[in-house]
Length: 76
Image (cartoon, rainbow, N blue to C red):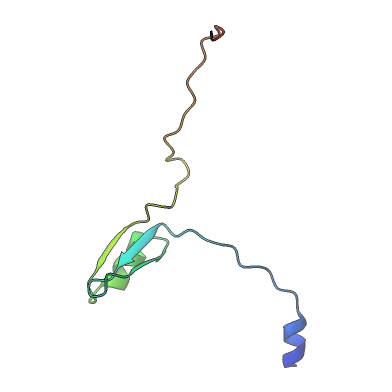
């Protein structure tokens, strides 16, 4: 049976960008494994540390890039 379980097709695991990071108070290690601020705060509760947004994750709808509006005149 164990051999049969190894032969079943599996789906590849998709990479997931988590939006929140925990920084450990004692070691300074940073772990960005949380989808919500509440999850991060629950992890540091009683342990110490801090929670912040991951600066490397881009949030859809929060982009500042834009294209200037064209006024119909050709550029020279």
